[in-house]
Image: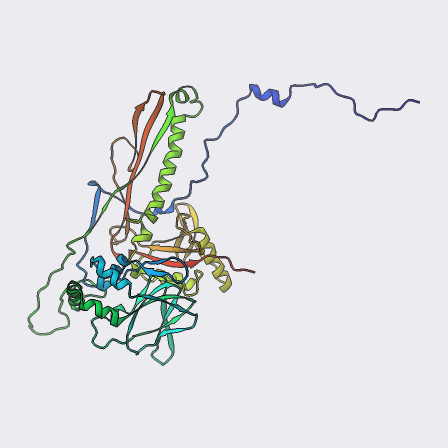
Length: 468
């Protein structure tokens, strides 16, 4: 008995396969792609000043009021929490004092104290007997309002201190109540311990007396030496003369540099240059990499980076953790002519979540043909180079820009030898014995804050998404 096969009959190929045909075809190729390229809004929005001498000096009026810095704390786990002595010079009264032995003795007087959320640390009107440094946590500064209610005047957090401003007062009393908003740790030093050190350090006494003398001199609301001006008078009274004093030690910014050596084998450059120039493509991607580094340095460099050099008086904290519309309003209101806000994309998303909770819809604005989110008409630009801490907190920057407005400016130098882009040059370094060509690629840049309120930072912004 015969059976029919169910397998299909093998058919012979009737035409050329596409796989074979591709051997004779020319492929359409893209230029080399790079995932690390970002919008680099900071570089695009900063006004750039041509620094011909390589150094930019920021002249300011003489300031008598010393700004507050932050004390750094070293934590080795558990209760082993100590102040780094050198950072005590960030306190206004110790600014410029450099006797490390005395600073170390002062640091040793601080002892850790645990606090709980809701705990009142000091009450307004009580005598000041201790100085406090916040090692970790958030405190609320409270005051009694005009009609007897309690007013929240703001939040202080890690590295901030209070109590040292009572120095020089005959009978110091707390002006505000401080209450813990979260659990945390304080470092506490008794006034009696400081007075004991002060009695054994004559140079420290002289330093503090000089500070107090300057603090008593007339100043304007920004702490600058007052200009004596008569107004509202009648008749012919004697009018005092005056002059505007300058800071005798102005800040100077030297241009920083980012460099790399690009290497290309001569055989690659000679034989594989069509349809795209290999050297040009290598150089294009290298320049992108340098510009990305440049933007990161403008934000994070300890010497001139905006995050490190913003004045501590221009740094505020969120009221509750995540960035709310109230927080951005506080940040914007600290300066005139805020040009733009700069935030990590996750911080922008966290801000949108807070707007959604309140039923608010942030606006948008057109910048260079791009629709970007805005708040109060001020564009919010994303920047992934703003760091995020391990606790999922970050910062939001607000800036006024330009020399005419005493803002933030970028610094570079135009017309450098073999310039490829503004303040970036490519210099041929020769061919080595292995037939490899080398090009030195260099970019020169920096940034300057002309006056302290040109930039403000909203710090400790909680960007962690809430749990459902």
